[in-house]
Image 1 (cartoon, rainbow, N blue to C red):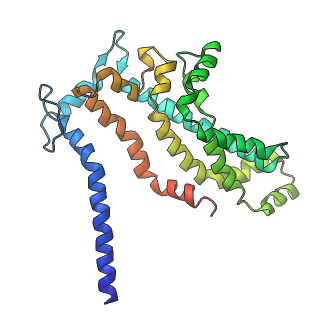
Image 2: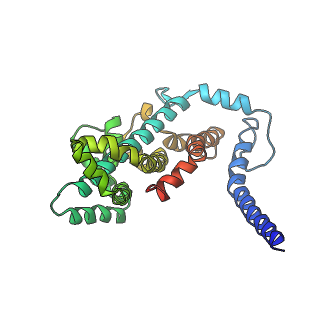
Image 3: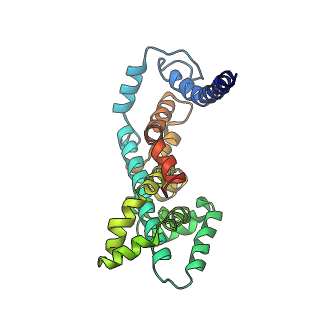
Length: 275
């Protein structure tokens, strides 16, 4: 009787998971299927695959658009990758350094500083764009990758994650490193950084997807066609066109593949990073 109940419970669980997966995947598949038909066909959600998949995507990947011809799929993918990777990498490093300083150094008003960092979580990122743009413009960083990435790297959320993780690190590790003559930098580099890798990897992936999907800040700080990201390219091509729908499919692939391939590391880093 118990085995039957267990099988029935497992069947229900798997059924719910399968239905949920179909609900999430079906719109994406329908979107992709509509891009596999001839260019002159009506763009609408559909489930039947067409015969023009290779032709449509090969033409789109090799085509150039815009007044200067700099709007290409490969260029937009590269710009989005630089934005996502730079945004995520610098955010992880800065957050780890900030948490390390707050935990292991005698910083005056450390609690107040941490409270201010937490208050930044209450402010939407978009609410800081106008004053941030004024600073970027005064520094001459408009239409540069530095101006695109650097103003977004400060993160109260990342500092919170690393602070909570570092609080779980045993004090015996610090005492042992001091007995071995290790200074603050060596302790950070040889002990804390390897221990923080699961949390850092999880935070990197989450922030990479956030940086990849950024739209408003690239629109504000860049105007050259050569600096278009994939998300901004959607505005350029239009969502209802064949090119816009193919670009949507291409834009989904990199972050989706990263999440699928590293989902175990993400879960471990966010919820089990102290073990």
